[in-house]
Length: 615
Image (cartoon, rainbow, N blue to C red):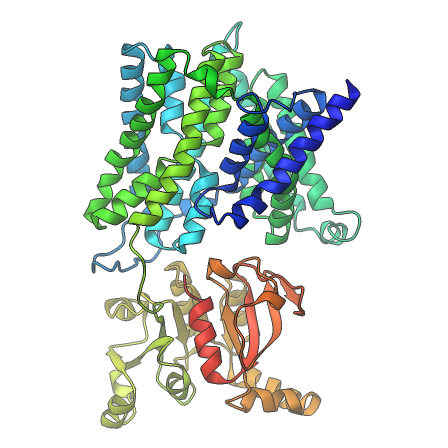
Protein backbone atom coordinates (compact mmCIF):
# COMPACT_ATOMS: atom_id res chain seq x y z
CA UNK A 1 0.00 0.00 0.00
CA UNK A 2 2.76 2.39 0.97
CA UNK A 3 4.75 1.41 -2.16
CA UNK A 4 1.75 1.98 -4.43
CA UNK A 5 1.21 5.37 -2.82
CA UNK A 6 4.75 6.53 -3.52
CA UNK A 7 4.69 5.08 -7.06
CA UNK A 8 1.52 6.97 -8.05
CA UNK A 9 2.88 10.19 -6.54
CA UNK A 10 6.17 9.83 -8.45
CA UNK A 11 4.33 9.19 -11.75
CA UNK A 12 2.13 12.29 -11.28
CA UNK A 13 5.11 14.49 -10.33
CA UNK A 14 7.08 13.23 -13.36
CA UNK A 15 4.06 13.87 -15.63
CA UNK A 16 3.75 17.43 -14.31
CA UNK A 17 7.49 18.00 -14.84
CA UNK A 18 7.66 16.57 -18.36
CA UNK A 19 4.46 18.19 -19.75
CA UNK A 20 5.86 21.72 -20.42
CA UNK A 21 9.06 20.19 -21.85
CA UNK A 22 7.01 18.10 -24.31
CA UNK A 23 4.91 21.15 -25.26
CA UNK A 24 8.06 23.12 -26.00
CA UNK A 25 9.75 20.32 -27.96
CA UNK A 26 6.62 19.61 -30.04
CA UNK A 27 6.06 23.36 -30.60
CA UNK A 28 2.47 23.18 -29.29
CA UNK A 29 2.52 26.80 -28.13
CA UNK A 30 -1.21 27.25 -28.85
CA UNK A 31 -2.15 24.95 -25.97
CA UNK A 32 -2.25 26.23 -22.36
CA UNK A 33 0.04 24.17 -20.10
CA UNK A 34 -2.82 23.37 -17.67
CA UNK A 35 -4.81 21.80 -20.53
CA UNK A 36 -1.79 19.72 -21.56
CA UNK A 37 -1.49 18.52 -17.95
CA UNK A 38 -5.10 17.30 -18.04
CA UNK A 39 -4.44 15.49 -21.35
CA UNK A 40 -1.33 13.81 -19.90
CA UNK A 41 -3.48 12.81 -16.92
CA UNK A 42 -5.92 11.16 -19.35
CA UNK A 43 -3.10 8.97 -20.72
CA UNK A 44 -1.88 7.79 -17.32
CA UNK A 45 -5.33 7.57 -15.67
CA UNK A 46 -8.67 5.83 -16.11
CA UNK A 47 -8.98 6.77 -19.80
CA UNK A 48 -5.52 5.46 -20.65
CA UNK A 49 -3.02 3.10 -19.05
CA UNK A 50 -4.59 3.39 -15.57
CA UNK A 51 -1.22 3.34 -13.78
CA UNK A 52 -2.11 6.04 -11.21
CA UNK A 53 -4.35 5.23 -8.25
CA UNK A 54 -5.53 8.06 -6.01
CA UNK A 55 -4.60 7.76 -2.34
CA UNK A 56 -4.18 10.03 0.69
CA UNK A 57 -0.99 11.64 -0.64
CA UNK A 58 -2.39 12.53 -4.05
CA UNK A 59 -5.82 13.47 -2.69
CA UNK A 60 -4.28 15.92 -0.20
CA UNK A 61 -1.83 17.49 -2.68
CA UNK A 62 -4.53 17.71 -5.36
CA UNK A 63 -6.92 19.43 -2.95
CA UNK A 64 -4.19 21.87 -1.88
CA UNK A 65 -3.47 22.53 -5.57
CA UNK A 66 -7.15 23.34 -6.16
CA UNK A 67 -7.23 25.65 -3.13
CA UNK A 68 -4.07 27.43 -4.29
CA UNK A 69 -5.44 27.73 -7.84
CA UNK A 70 -8.54 29.51 -6.49
CA UNK A 71 -6.29 31.73 -4.38
CA UNK A 72 -4.22 32.73 -7.42
CA UNK A 73 -7.44 33.32 -9.41
CA UNK A 74 -8.47 35.86 -6.78
CA UNK A 75 -4.95 37.32 -6.76
CA UNK A 76 -5.04 37.84 -10.55
CA UNK A 77 -7.94 40.30 -10.21
CA UNK A 78 -6.60 43.83 -10.70
CA UNK A 79 -9.06 46.15 -8.95
CA UNK A 80 -7.54 49.26 -10.55
CA UNK A 81 -9.44 48.11 -13.67
CA UNK A 82 -12.67 49.08 -11.88
CA UNK A 83 -11.50 52.68 -11.43
CA UNK A 84 -13.26 55.17 -13.69
CA UNK A 85 -12.14 58.54 -15.02
CA UNK A 86 -9.28 57.32 -17.18
CA UNK A 87 -8.27 59.48 -20.09
CA UNK A 88 -9.84 58.69 -23.42
CA UNK A 89 -7.79 56.64 -25.84
CA UNK A 90 -8.12 57.12 -29.60
CA UNK A 91 -8.90 53.89 -31.47
CA UNK A 92 -7.51 53.10 -34.96
CA UNK A 93 -11.01 53.81 -36.29
CA UNK A 94 -10.69 57.41 -35.05
CA UNK A 95 -13.40 56.95 -32.39
CA UNK A 96 -12.87 57.57 -28.69
CA UNK A 97 -12.27 54.36 -26.75
CA UNK A 98 -15.27 53.32 -24.63
CA UNK A 99 -15.34 53.24 -20.83
CA UNK A 100 -13.92 49.78 -20.04
CA UNK A 101 -15.88 49.18 -16.83
CA UNK A 102 -19.24 50.28 -18.27
CA UNK A 103 -18.85 48.25 -21.49
CA UNK A 104 -17.56 45.17 -19.61
CA UNK A 105 -20.52 45.29 -17.21
CA UNK A 106 -23.03 45.53 -20.09
CA UNK A 107 -21.37 42.58 -21.87
CA UNK A 108 -21.33 40.41 -18.72
CA UNK A 109 -25.00 41.16 -17.97
CA UNK A 110 -25.75 40.00 -21.54
CA UNK A 111 -23.63 36.85 -21.03
CA UNK A 112 -25.37 36.01 -17.75
CA UNK A 113 -28.89 36.62 -19.12
CA UNK A 114 -28.19 34.46 -22.18
CA UNK A 115 -26.60 31.77 -19.98
CA UNK A 116 -29.75 31.66 -17.85
CA UNK A 117 -31.92 31.29 -20.97
CA UNK A 118 -29.71 28.54 -22.41
CA UNK A 119 -29.70 26.73 -19.05
CA UNK A 120 -33.48 26.48 -19.04
CA UNK A 121 -33.33 25.17 -22.62
CA UNK A 122 -30.90 22.42 -21.48
CA UNK A 123 -33.26 21.56 -18.60
CA UNK A 124 -36.30 21.64 -20.93
CA UNK A 125 -34.75 19.16 -23.41
CA UNK A 126 -33.72 16.89 -20.53
CA UNK A 127 -29.91 17.18 -20.73
CA UNK A 128 -29.57 18.80 -17.29
CA UNK A 129 -31.70 18.79 -14.14
CA UNK A 130 -30.39 21.90 -12.37
CA UNK A 131 -30.67 25.27 -14.18
CA UNK A 132 -28.73 27.13 -11.42
CA UNK A 133 -25.61 24.95 -11.84
CA UNK A 134 -25.87 25.07 -15.64
CA UNK A 135 -26.07 28.89 -15.59
CA UNK A 136 -22.84 29.05 -13.58
CA UNK A 137 -21.09 26.65 -15.97
CA UNK A 138 -22.14 28.51 -19.13
CA UNK A 139 -21.44 32.03 -17.78
CA UNK A 140 -18.00 31.38 -16.30
CA UNK A 141 -14.79 32.49 -18.06
CA UNK A 142 -11.27 31.21 -17.39
CA UNK A 143 -8.88 33.92 -16.20
CA UNK A 144 -6.14 31.27 -16.35
CA UNK A 145 -6.55 31.11 -20.16
CA UNK A 146 -7.52 34.75 -20.86
CA UNK A 147 -4.60 36.40 -19.03
CA UNK A 148 -1.71 34.45 -20.70
CA UNK A 149 -3.36 34.78 -24.14
CA UNK A 150 -3.71 38.56 -23.79
CA UNK A 151 -0.09 38.79 -22.62
CA UNK A 152 1.15 36.73 -25.57
CA UNK A 153 -0.80 38.94 -27.98
CA UNK A 154 0.72 42.07 -26.37
CA UNK A 155 -2.67 43.76 -25.89
CA UNK A 156 -3.11 43.49 -22.12
CA UNK A 157 -2.88 47.27 -21.61
CA UNK A 158 -4.88 48.27 -24.69
CA UNK A 159 -8.55 49.26 -24.44
CA UNK A 160 -9.81 46.03 -26.04
CA UNK A 161 -7.45 43.97 -23.84
CA UNK A 162 -8.77 45.69 -20.71
CA UNK A 163 -12.39 45.09 -21.77
CA UNK A 164 -11.76 41.36 -22.34
CA UNK A 165 -9.88 41.10 -19.03
CA UNK A 166 -12.53 42.99 -17.08
CA UNK A 167 -15.39 40.85 -18.47
CA UNK A 168 -13.43 37.75 -17.34
CA UNK A 169 -12.75 39.31 -13.92
CA UNK A 170 -16.44 40.19 -13.34
CA UNK A 171 -17.46 36.71 -14.50
CA UNK A 172 -14.92 35.16 -12.11
CA UNK A 173 -16.15 37.20 -9.12
CA UNK A 174 -19.87 36.72 -9.76
CA UNK A 175 -19.57 33.00 -10.59
CA UNK A 176 -17.46 32.31 -7.52
CA UNK A 177 -19.93 34.03 -5.19
CA UNK A 178 -22.93 32.27 -6.81
CA UNK A 179 -21.09 28.94 -6.62
CA UNK A 180 -20.81 29.47 -2.85
CA UNK A 181 -24.54 30.23 -2.70
CA UNK A 182 -25.26 27.09 -4.77
CA UNK A 183 -23.15 24.96 -2.40
CA UNK A 184 -24.94 26.34 0.65
CA UNK A 185 -28.42 25.77 -0.88
CA UNK A 186 -27.83 22.24 -2.22
CA UNK A 187 -25.37 21.12 0.45
CA UNK A 188 -27.99 19.25 2.43
CA UNK A 189 -29.78 20.25 5.58
CA UNK A 190 -31.01 23.79 6.20
CA UNK A 191 -29.83 26.56 3.94
CA UNK A 192 -26.95 28.44 5.59
CA UNK A 193 -26.46 31.12 2.94
CA UNK A 194 -26.57 33.86 5.57
CA UNK A 195 -23.47 32.31 7.20
CA UNK A 196 -21.47 33.52 4.19
CA UNK A 197 -21.73 36.98 5.77
CA UNK A 198 -19.47 35.69 8.57
CA UNK A 199 -16.83 34.74 6.01
CA UNK A 200 -17.02 38.10 4.22
CA UNK A 201 -17.00 39.92 7.58
CA UNK A 202 -13.82 38.05 8.55
CA UNK A 203 -12.35 38.98 5.16
CA UNK A 204 -13.06 42.70 5.72
CA UNK A 205 -11.54 42.58 9.22
CA UNK A 206 -8.40 40.82 7.93
CA UNK A 207 -8.10 43.36 5.09
CA UNK A 208 -8.01 46.31 7.51
CA UNK A 209 -5.62 44.42 9.78
CA UNK A 210 -3.28 43.82 6.83
CA UNK A 211 -3.61 47.44 5.69
CA UNK A 212 -2.59 48.63 9.17
CA UNK A 213 0.55 46.53 9.47
CA UNK A 214 1.83 45.98 5.92
CA UNK A 215 3.89 49.19 5.64
CA UNK A 216 5.39 49.12 9.15
CA UNK A 217 9.19 49.22 9.21
CA UNK A 218 9.52 46.06 11.34
CA UNK A 219 7.40 44.13 8.79
CA UNK A 220 9.73 45.20 5.96
CA UNK A 221 12.73 44.09 8.06
CA UNK A 222 11.18 40.65 8.67
CA UNK A 223 10.29 40.21 4.99
CA UNK A 224 13.89 39.33 4.15
CA UNK A 225 16.24 36.47 4.92
CA UNK A 226 14.88 33.34 6.54
CA UNK A 227 11.85 34.99 8.16
CA UNK A 228 9.85 35.92 4.99
CA UNK A 229 6.99 37.26 7.11
CA UNK A 230 4.99 38.32 4.03
CA UNK A 231 4.86 34.78 2.64
CA UNK A 232 3.96 33.40 6.08
CA UNK A 233 1.15 35.96 6.36
CA UNK A 234 -0.29 34.94 2.96
CA UNK A 235 -0.38 31.22 3.82
CA UNK A 236 -1.86 32.00 7.25
CA UNK A 237 -4.57 34.06 5.53
CA UNK A 238 -5.38 31.23 3.08
CA UNK A 239 -5.62 28.54 5.79
CA UNK A 240 -7.61 30.83 8.12
CA UNK A 241 -10.24 31.73 5.50
CA UNK A 242 -10.42 28.14 4.22
CA UNK A 243 -11.01 26.97 7.80
CA UNK A 244 -13.77 29.57 8.32
CA UNK A 245 -15.37 28.51 4.99
CA UNK A 246 -15.49 24.86 6.02
CA UNK A 247 -16.70 25.73 9.55
CA UNK A 248 -19.75 27.63 8.24
CA UNK A 249 -20.50 24.88 5.71
CA UNK A 250 -19.30 26.74 2.59
CA UNK A 251 -16.79 25.43 0.06
CA UNK A 252 -13.11 25.74 1.03
CA UNK A 253 -12.30 27.18 -2.40
CA UNK A 254 -14.44 30.26 -1.60
CA UNK A 255 -12.18 31.03 1.36
CA UNK A 256 -9.10 30.56 -0.83
CA UNK A 257 -10.55 32.81 -3.55
CA UNK A 258 -11.41 35.49 -0.97
CA UNK A 259 -7.84 35.29 0.39
CA UNK A 260 -6.52 35.97 -3.13
CA UNK A 261 -8.89 38.94 -3.53
CA UNK A 262 -7.71 40.40 -0.20
CA UNK A 263 -4.04 40.03 -1.10
CA UNK A 264 -4.73 41.68 -4.48
CA UNK A 265 -6.51 44.60 -2.73
CA UNK A 266 -3.47 45.04 -0.46
CA UNK A 267 -1.31 45.52 -3.61
CA UNK A 268 1.58 43.13 -2.91
CA UNK A 269 4.94 43.79 -4.55
CA UNK A 270 5.78 41.92 -7.75
CA UNK A 271 8.43 39.86 -5.98
CA UNK A 272 5.82 38.44 -3.59
CA UNK A 273 3.39 37.61 -6.44
CA UNK A 274 6.24 35.94 -8.34
CA UNK A 275 7.06 33.74 -5.32
CA UNK A 276 3.42 32.68 -4.92
CA UNK A 277 3.07 31.99 -8.67
CA UNK A 278 6.28 29.94 -8.63
CA UNK A 279 5.11 27.80 -5.72
CA UNK A 280 1.58 27.34 -7.06
CA UNK A 281 2.22 26.75 -10.77
CA UNK A 282 5.53 25.02 -10.10
CA UNK A 283 4.30 22.40 -7.64
CA UNK A 284 0.73 22.14 -6.33
CA UNK A 285 -1.43 23.25 -9.28
CA UNK A 286 0.14 20.89 -11.88
CA UNK A 287 -0.61 17.96 -9.54
CA UNK A 288 -4.26 19.05 -9.38
CA UNK A 289 -4.65 19.34 -13.17
CA UNK A 290 -2.91 16.02 -13.84
CA UNK A 291 -5.27 14.39 -11.32
CA UNK A 292 -8.28 15.95 -13.07
CA UNK A 293 -7.19 14.03 -16.19
CA UNK A 294 -6.44 10.88 -14.18
CA UNK A 295 -9.97 10.79 -12.68
CA UNK A 296 -11.69 11.51 -16.00
CA UNK A 297 -13.03 8.38 -17.71
CA UNK A 298 -13.74 9.48 -21.29
CA UNK A 299 -14.92 6.04 -22.46
CA UNK A 300 -17.69 6.01 -19.86
CA UNK A 301 -19.00 9.33 -21.21
CA UNK A 302 -19.88 7.85 -24.60
CA UNK A 303 -21.95 4.99 -23.17
CA UNK A 304 -24.82 7.34 -22.31
CA UNK A 305 -26.44 8.91 -25.43
CA UNK A 306 -27.61 11.88 -23.34
CA UNK A 307 -24.02 12.68 -22.28
CA UNK A 308 -22.81 12.13 -25.85
CA UNK A 309 -25.34 14.73 -27.05
CA UNK A 310 -24.56 17.16 -24.21
CA UNK A 311 -20.89 17.68 -25.19
CA UNK A 312 -21.39 19.33 -28.65
CA UNK A 313 -24.55 21.19 -27.56
CA UNK A 314 -22.83 22.64 -24.49
CA UNK A 315 -19.86 23.75 -26.62
CA UNK A 316 -22.26 25.52 -29.02
CA UNK A 317 -24.10 27.03 -26.02
CA UNK A 318 -20.85 28.41 -24.60
CA UNK A 319 -20.02 30.04 -27.95
CA UNK A 320 -23.49 31.60 -28.31
CA UNK A 321 -23.47 32.92 -24.72
CA UNK A 322 -20.23 34.86 -25.33
CA UNK A 323 -20.31 35.82 -29.03
CA UNK A 324 -23.84 37.32 -29.07
CA UNK A 325 -23.27 39.78 -26.14
CA UNK A 326 -19.76 40.70 -27.39
CA UNK A 327 -21.32 42.06 -30.61
CA UNK A 328 -22.00 45.19 -28.52
CA UNK A 329 -18.34 46.04 -29.23
CA UNK A 330 -19.18 46.56 -32.93
CA UNK A 331 -19.95 50.18 -32.01
CA UNK A 332 -16.20 50.72 -31.63
CA UNK A 333 -14.32 47.77 -33.17
CA UNK A 334 -14.30 45.84 -36.45
CA UNK A 335 -15.95 42.41 -36.77
CA UNK A 336 -12.67 40.43 -36.63
CA UNK A 337 -11.62 42.05 -33.33
CA UNK A 338 -15.11 41.57 -31.88
CA UNK A 339 -15.40 37.89 -32.88
CA UNK A 340 -11.84 37.18 -31.66
CA UNK A 341 -12.77 38.67 -28.26
CA UNK A 342 -15.90 36.49 -28.12
CA UNK A 343 -13.92 33.32 -28.86
CA UNK A 344 -11.36 34.08 -26.14
CA UNK A 345 -14.11 34.73 -23.58
CA UNK A 346 -15.59 31.29 -24.40
CA UNK A 347 -12.63 29.58 -22.72
CA UNK A 348 -13.63 27.99 -19.40
CA UNK A 349 -11.65 25.75 -17.09
CA UNK A 350 -11.02 26.19 -13.35
CA UNK A 351 -14.49 27.23 -12.20
CA UNK A 352 -16.19 24.64 -14.43
CA UNK A 353 -14.05 21.99 -12.74
CA UNK A 354 -15.01 23.49 -9.37
CA UNK A 355 -18.73 23.58 -10.22
CA UNK A 356 -18.68 20.05 -11.66
CA UNK A 357 -16.79 18.67 -8.63
CA UNK A 358 -19.19 20.35 -6.17
CA UNK A 359 -22.26 19.30 -8.19
CA UNK A 360 -21.09 15.68 -8.26
CA UNK A 361 -20.31 15.64 -4.53
CA UNK A 362 -23.78 17.01 -3.75
CA UNK A 363 -25.32 14.43 -6.10
CA UNK A 364 -26.89 17.14 -8.25
CA UNK A 365 -25.13 15.59 -11.28
CA UNK A 366 -23.62 12.17 -11.97
CA UNK A 367 -19.90 11.46 -12.27
CA UNK A 368 -20.36 10.96 -16.04
CA UNK A 369 -22.06 14.36 -16.33
CA UNK A 370 -19.25 15.93 -14.30
CA UNK A 371 -16.68 14.34 -16.64
CA UNK A 372 -18.55 15.66 -19.70
CA UNK A 373 -18.57 19.22 -18.31
CA UNK A 374 -14.83 19.07 -17.60
CA UNK A 375 -14.15 17.62 -21.07
CA UNK A 376 -16.02 20.52 -22.74
CA UNK A 377 -14.05 23.00 -20.60
CA UNK A 378 -10.79 21.40 -21.76
CA UNK A 379 -11.91 21.55 -25.42
CA UNK A 380 -12.79 25.27 -25.14
CA UNK A 381 -9.40 26.01 -23.56
CA UNK A 382 -7.63 24.39 -26.53
CA UNK A 383 -9.81 25.61 -29.40
CA UNK A 384 -10.85 29.17 -28.51
CA UNK A 385 -7.36 30.71 -28.00
CA UNK A 386 -6.39 29.35 -31.47
CA UNK A 387 -9.40 31.11 -33.07
CA UNK A 388 -8.54 34.27 -31.12
CA UNK A 389 -4.98 34.31 -32.49
CA UNK A 390 -6.21 33.63 -36.06
CA UNK A 391 -8.90 36.32 -36.03
CA UNK A 392 -7.38 39.13 -33.95
CA UNK A 393 -5.81 41.76 -36.28
CA UNK A 394 -2.02 41.88 -36.20
CA UNK A 395 -0.37 45.22 -35.43
CA UNK A 396 1.98 45.49 -38.40
CA UNK A 397 2.95 49.13 -37.98
CA UNK A 398 5.66 50.64 -35.84
CA UNK A 399 4.94 51.14 -32.15
CA UNK A 400 2.93 54.25 -31.35
CA UNK A 401 4.99 57.31 -30.56
CA UNK A 402 4.98 58.56 -26.98
CA UNK A 403 3.06 61.85 -26.86
CA UNK A 404 4.76 64.50 -24.70
CA UNK A 405 3.24 67.90 -23.86
CA UNK A 406 5.51 70.74 -22.65
CA UNK A 407 3.62 73.47 -20.79
CA UNK A 408 5.74 76.62 -21.20
CA UNK A 409 8.23 77.54 -23.92
CA UNK A 410 11.58 78.53 -22.41
CA UNK A 411 15.29 77.75 -22.45
CA UNK A 412 14.72 74.53 -20.50
CA UNK A 413 11.88 72.98 -22.53
CA UNK A 414 12.56 74.09 -26.11
CA UNK A 415 16.05 72.54 -26.48
CA UNK A 416 14.74 69.24 -25.03
CA UNK A 417 12.04 69.00 -27.72
CA UNK A 418 14.81 69.13 -30.34
CA UNK A 419 16.90 66.49 -28.55
CA UNK A 420 14.15 63.87 -28.19
CA UNK A 421 14.15 61.20 -30.90
CA UNK A 422 11.29 62.08 -33.35
CA UNK A 423 10.85 58.38 -34.19
CA UNK A 424 9.91 57.65 -30.59
CA UNK A 425 8.42 60.90 -29.26
CA UNK A 426 5.75 63.28 -30.55
CA UNK A 427 6.22 66.62 -28.77
CA UNK A 428 3.94 69.66 -28.50
CA UNK A 429 4.73 72.91 -26.67
CA UNK A 430 1.92 75.02 -25.16
CA UNK A 431 2.60 78.70 -24.44
CA UNK A 432 0.62 81.90 -23.86
CA UNK A 433 0.36 84.37 -26.73
CA UNK A 434 1.82 87.51 -25.15
CA UNK A 435 4.96 85.77 -23.91
CA UNK A 436 5.71 83.88 -27.12
CA UNK A 437 9.33 84.38 -28.10
CA UNK A 438 9.96 85.58 -31.62
CA UNK A 439 6.83 84.01 -33.08
CA UNK A 440 8.06 83.46 -36.64
CA UNK A 441 11.37 81.85 -35.62
CA UNK A 442 9.70 79.72 -32.92
CA UNK A 443 7.06 78.40 -35.30
CA UNK A 444 9.67 77.43 -37.88
CA UNK A 445 11.67 75.43 -35.33
CA UNK A 446 9.06 74.16 -32.85
CA UNK A 447 5.40 73.17 -32.86
CA UNK A 448 3.95 75.67 -30.37
CA UNK A 449 0.24 75.88 -29.62
CA UNK A 450 -1.03 79.20 -28.30
CA UNK A 451 -3.21 79.30 -25.20
CA UNK A 452 -4.84 82.29 -23.49
CA UNK A 453 -3.34 81.55 -20.05
CA UNK A 454 -1.55 78.87 -18.06
CA UNK A 455 -4.75 77.46 -16.55
CA UNK A 456 -6.31 73.99 -16.58
CA UNK A 457 -9.38 75.10 -18.58
CA UNK A 458 -7.30 76.73 -21.33
CA UNK A 459 -5.12 73.59 -21.61
CA UNK A 460 -8.19 71.31 -21.68
CA UNK A 461 -9.54 73.25 -24.67
CA UNK A 462 -6.36 72.33 -26.57
CA UNK A 463 -6.50 68.67 -25.41
CA UNK A 464 -3.15 69.12 -23.69
CA UNK A 465 -3.90 66.29 -21.23
CA UNK A 466 -4.57 63.66 -23.93
CA UNK A 467 -0.90 62.61 -23.87
CA UNK A 468 1.36 59.95 -22.36
CA UNK A 469 3.66 62.40 -20.59
CA UNK A 470 3.40 66.06 -19.55
CA UNK A 471 6.21 68.44 -18.52
CA UNK A 472 5.05 71.59 -16.68
CA UNK A 473 7.56 74.47 -16.65
CA UNK A 474 5.69 77.81 -16.77
CA UNK A 475 7.96 79.85 -14.48
CA UNK A 476 5.30 79.94 -11.75
CA UNK A 477 5.67 76.95 -9.43
CA UNK A 478 2.16 77.30 -7.98
CA UNK A 479 0.65 77.08 -11.46
CA UNK A 480 3.02 74.21 -12.25
CA UNK A 481 1.79 72.32 -9.17
CA UNK A 482 -1.90 72.93 -9.96
CA UNK A 483 -1.53 71.80 -13.58
CA UNK A 484 0.57 68.76 -12.59
CA UNK A 485 -1.98 67.63 -9.99
CA UNK A 486 -4.81 67.95 -12.49
CA UNK A 487 -2.79 65.98 -15.08
CA UNK A 488 -2.39 63.21 -12.50
CA UNK A 489 -6.17 63.20 -11.94
CA UNK A 490 -6.61 62.87 -15.73
CA UNK A 491 -4.55 59.66 -15.59
CA UNK A 492 -1.60 61.02 -17.61
CA UNK A 493 0.96 58.20 -17.34
CA UNK A 494 3.89 60.40 -16.30
CA UNK A 495 3.88 63.97 -14.97
CA UNK A 496 7.01 66.12 -14.49
CA UNK A 497 6.83 69.56 -12.87
CA UNK A 498 9.32 72.39 -12.26
CA UNK A 499 9.11 73.21 -8.54
CA UNK A 500 11.72 74.77 -6.27
CA UNK A 501 9.89 74.95 -2.91
CA UNK A 502 10.71 71.90 -0.72
CA UNK A 503 7.18 71.77 0.78
CA UNK A 504 5.50 71.92 -2.61
CA UNK A 505 7.97 69.38 -4.02
CA UNK A 506 7.20 67.01 -1.13
CA UNK A 507 3.45 67.31 -1.77
CA UNK A 508 3.85 66.51 -5.48
CA UNK A 509 6.17 63.58 -4.81
CA UNK A 510 3.43 62.03 -2.63
CA UNK A 511 1.23 62.06 -5.75
CA UNK A 512 4.03 60.30 -7.73
CA UNK A 513 4.83 63.45 -9.74
CA UNK A 514 8.50 63.81 -10.75
CA UNK A 515 10.17 67.07 -9.75
CA UNK A 516 12.95 69.11 -11.38
CA UNK A 517 14.32 72.60 -10.75
CA UNK A 518 17.27 74.69 -11.88
CA UNK A 519 18.74 74.70 -8.34
CA UNK A 520 18.37 70.92 -7.96
CA UNK A 521 19.92 70.30 -11.38
CA UNK A 522 22.85 72.64 -10.71
CA UNK A 523 23.61 71.10 -7.32
CA UNK A 524 23.38 67.55 -8.72
CA UNK A 525 25.63 68.31 -11.68
CA UNK A 526 28.25 70.11 -9.56
CA UNK A 527 28.34 67.28 -7.00
CA UNK A 528 28.66 64.71 -9.80
CA UNK A 529 31.52 66.68 -11.39
CA UNK A 530 33.37 66.60 -8.07
CA UNK A 531 32.59 63.02 -7.00
CA UNK A 532 32.26 61.16 -10.33
CA UNK A 533 33.62 63.10 -13.31
CA UNK A 534 33.66 59.96 -15.50
CA UNK A 535 29.93 59.48 -14.97
CA UNK A 536 29.33 63.06 -16.10
CA UNK A 537 31.31 62.40 -19.27
CA UNK A 538 29.04 59.44 -19.99
CA UNK A 539 25.93 61.55 -19.39
CA UNK A 540 27.05 64.46 -21.55
CA UNK A 541 28.49 62.42 -24.43
CA UNK A 542 25.69 61.85 -26.95
CA UNK A 543 27.15 58.50 -28.04
CA UNK A 544 27.68 57.04 -24.54
CA UNK A 545 24.91 58.64 -22.50
CA UNK A 546 22.56 56.60 -20.29
CA UNK A 547 19.09 55.71 -21.57
CA UNK A 548 16.01 54.25 -19.88
CA UNK A 549 14.06 51.53 -21.71
CA UNK A 550 10.79 50.23 -20.26
CA UNK A 551 10.28 46.51 -20.86
CA UNK A 552 6.64 46.33 -22.05
CA UNK A 553 6.95 43.60 -24.68
CA UNK A 554 5.78 40.26 -23.14
CA UNK A 555 7.97 38.37 -25.62
CA UNK A 556 11.03 39.18 -23.48
CA UNK A 557 9.46 38.41 -20.09
CA UNK A 558 11.43 35.87 -17.98
CA UNK A 559 14.42 35.78 -20.37
CA UNK A 560 17.96 35.56 -18.96
CA UNK A 561 20.33 38.38 -19.94
CA UNK A 562 22.84 35.81 -21.19
CA UNK A 563 20.14 34.54 -23.59
CA UNK A 564 19.03 38.01 -24.71
CA UNK A 565 18.57 37.67 -28.50
CA UNK A 566 20.02 41.08 -29.46
CA UNK A 567 23.70 41.71 -29.96
CA UNK A 568 25.20 45.12 -30.51
CA UNK A 569 26.92 48.08 -28.93
CA UNK A 570 25.01 48.20 -25.65
CA UNK A 571 25.64 47.61 -21.94
CA UNK A 572 23.01 47.03 -19.26
CA UNK A 573 23.95 49.32 -16.37
CA UNK A 574 21.03 48.88 -13.97
CA UNK A 575 17.57 47.31 -13.75
CA UNK A 576 14.86 48.94 -11.66
CA UNK A 577 12.04 46.56 -10.64
CA UNK A 578 9.40 48.20 -8.47
CA UNK A 579 11.35 49.65 -5.54
CA UNK A 580 14.33 47.36 -6.13
CA UNK A 581 17.56 48.32 -7.91
CA UNK A 582 19.27 45.30 -9.49
CA UNK A 583 22.87 45.07 -10.71
CA UNK A 584 22.54 43.03 -13.93
CA UNK A 585 24.61 39.93 -14.71
CA UNK A 586 24.27 36.93 -17.03
CA UNK A 587 21.82 35.05 -14.79
CA UNK A 588 19.54 38.05 -14.22
CA UNK A 589 16.10 37.37 -15.66
CA UNK A 590 14.20 40.26 -17.27
CA UNK A 591 10.64 40.86 -16.10
CA UNK A 592 7.71 42.67 -17.68
CA UNK A 593 7.61 46.22 -16.29
CA UNK A 594 11.39 46.44 -15.64
CA UNK A 595 13.03 49.83 -16.23
CA UNK A 596 16.36 49.12 -17.94
CA UNK A 597 19.18 51.66 -17.72
CA UNK A 598 21.53 51.09 -20.66
CA UNK A 599 24.37 52.81 -22.47
CA UNK A 600 25.48 52.43 -26.06
CA UNK A 601 25.22 53.95 -29.51
CA UNK A 602 22.10 56.04 -30.03
CA UNK A 603 21.04 54.15 -33.16
CA UNK A 604 21.13 50.78 -31.48
CA UNK A 605 19.42 52.07 -28.32
CA UNK A 606 16.59 53.52 -30.47
CA UNK A 607 16.16 50.18 -32.23
CA UNK A 608 16.12 48.30 -28.92
CA UNK A 609 13.70 50.83 -27.39
CA UNK A 610 11.22 50.32 -30.24
CA UNK A 611 11.37 46.55 -29.79
CA UNK A 612 11.18 46.36 -25.98
CA UNK A 613 8.61 49.13 -25.47
CA UNK A 614 6.24 47.61 -28.03
CA UNK A 615 2.92 46.97 -26.24
